Image (cartoon, rainbow, N blue to C red):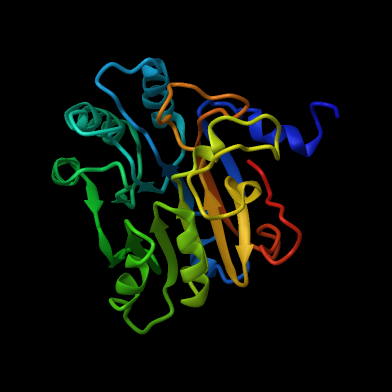
Length: 272
C-alpha cells in the first residue's frame, strides 16, 4: 500500500494538528445548518504529571485559528481521582481559546468523578449535562446529552415536538444503537481512543467498547443515524499511542447522502 491508500488515513494527522477538519454529509440536515462547524473534544485524560503535556499546549494554540461555531465535548476529562483540578485547568485553557459563537456543551465519561463533574460546571461558557436535552436558542438544533448509554432514553424524554435537528452527545459509542432506535440523526462519541494502540488500520487489540474493533473510530451508520467516534486527545492505562495519533475533529456539516457505511454491511468504517 502507498501512503495515499485509505488504510493510512487512521494515522495521518491533518494540519493544524491536532485539529482535523472533516466534511460530514448528513441526509436530513436542514438548510439552516449547512456549513455549521462543530469542534469535538473528547477523552483528555489529564494527569497532574502528564507526559504528553505538549499536546495540550498545541491544542490551546490551534483553537484560536480553527473556525468553529459550536464546541461539543464527550467526557473523560480527568484520568483518575486526584487529577480533577489539573483537568479543570485544561478545560479552562480550552474555553479561553476556542472561538465558538454558539457556545459549548459537554457530557461526562466513566473516568469523570463527582468532583470532576462539579468542577467542570464552573468553566465559563460550558454547559454540562448528565442526561437531558438542550435547545440552542439561535439554531434549529437540539443537543441530547447522555453520559452513560442508558441515559439516552431519559434524555429523549425531554424532547419537545418540533423540527429541530438533533445531535446526541454520548461517551460510549455503543449508545449509537439506542440513538438509531430513537431516530437521532447524528451522534458524537469517544471512549475508544480509536484503539490507542494499533498493529495496523484494522488490527486493534482493545477498544473498551462492545462495538467491533473495526468500528471503533471514524464515521459509521446505523440505519439513519450517523455516529462519529473520536480518537480523543489523551491516553489511558499507559501513556502510549501507536499508529493512532490523538485528534480533535472539526466537523463541517453538509447536506448529503454519503455519511459512511452501514453497520449492517461488512464490518467497515470510514476512517479518520
